[in-house]
Image (cartoon, rainbow, N blue to C red; front, side, top):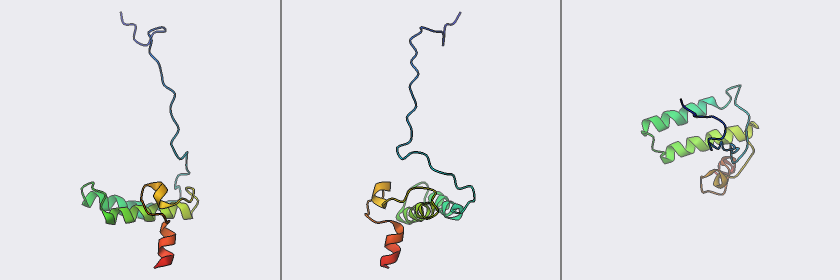
Length: 94
């Protein structure tokens, strides 16, 4: 007879950790979906390598989410892109 999962077997269940940046609203109205699809298409054509072109698309997607209140506005360097500006800041400079 098996005692798997029985009380007192010493199995400890860990407490789940929340995401580092908290929860965020889903894009129910698909406002940023075209950008997301372009990014995924780019990743597929690059065979999973996050090329500079794909990174620009992902920045555009994140910017779309920030502009529509689907995530908190933040600098791209805090989102893993290294630059210290948001995409909208970069557009204004050009």
